[in-house]
Length: 594
Image (tube, rainbow, N blue to C red; front, side, top):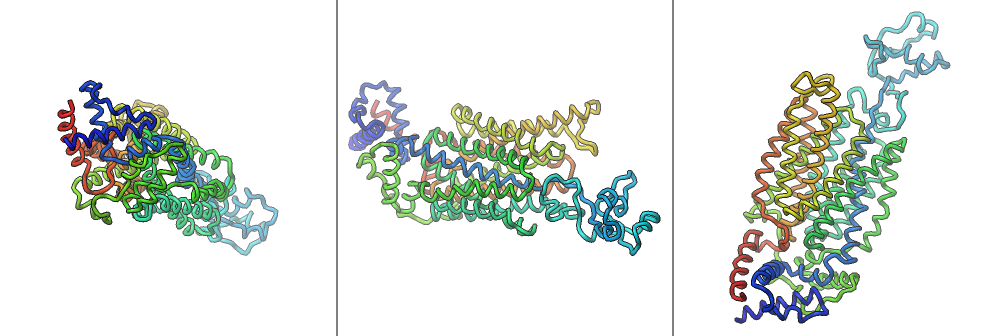
């Protein structure tokens, strides 16, 4: 009887937190039907596991404070996409020729065409060879014109780019004639950043807090993004890109943790979806700016200037009260909740605020080893890592295949960004109707279908052709581009669902480090895709996409559903244990009350 009275008292306090002006609304449970009471008991027992859900009801589930918090994620998301995809626009293809300015000493009035004709050998088809030149001779101009030059050698004095309309990294650092592989090195270096950054920022976010981790990542975006415009060597460019990639992944980990812990229910899902939509907007903004600027350094200068206002986040960004409580900083957690309530023009009852206290057990230091010791968390991390590896590998494989088709980089990014915004908005409907688990399964199933369709395409020397030779090349190319675009559409939805799903499955004390581990798998998938695509031009990359997608689809059913489930903060109870205890308690209490 005492337990029943205590539960009814908690029920009344929860109702009071929803409507502070009507405290007596919870005092008449006997007027409810048994069915309504059972549903209410289930909902209340769900919230009993998550005291912060009750507090955030009082603070305001999505008041001015939460709306401002979500809005603060927009600009960093735009800038993250801006710097992340900048490599696609600074390696503009250029047609080089050996620098043969030595001939100007004997013929200073020669035009550029005459200079090339006298000093550059030709291929059998009549075009100029790009990586060879005629050796200088101590003759006058008339002798050179009359007898011609015969001895050739590799370019000695660099290259010229007479047809270049823009200044890119290609003609800035002469990435031609055997140095083309440095472009792939830049991509691999950028993807290697998350291998280290995911571990570093995962540790920083969990140890020092969400607030300092976000500030550190934004500082990295500003310094490395703006500083890239002033590099004087290609190796220094690689170093700055490495720093940018770490900052991008650091912001993704810390911001997703902060949003997850401040928002509840569908508001959390909507906030993450909006953040990802603005990430796609950043890619579109980058495309427009890159198209209009004539120099690659100006692109990074503009990006650095746009990122400077992020310094103001030092004064306006909040810390996560969940993290503060788990670190034993109860006073700071209460202050943060009271500040949020004041912004939302709400008041937190003192009895409810007193529930913010240290855990019953002593606060312990969680570590990455807990993912091995806790069986449930180990399973979650392994499955999540497999899915992230698959999504990353498949996305980069489809993106690189699109590039091989000769589609304009500007057209490719604009269309992909529009499709990604549409895909992520569709996630709102999926998550509301079928939950996280089945939304992930549906998007992975779509990815499997598009990858299987790509298996019917093979690559030839003149382009792609169907196994059925009667299909015209133009129709084949259009069909391939369509399938690749739809594949990227499905993958964009998968990424959004998976960001939300992963954050909800992990405990507060290890949320950032868990996200760091799955980001590690994501970076590994991207690097593997770049390596395989550069080594082979067979169907192996697409075949691996199909195999990995099928494996990820199968493993996704091992994960528990998290929709309308409270977040768990410590390692004391895994989601399965918590749900079992919750169901047993619901059955006992509801039968007694009914």
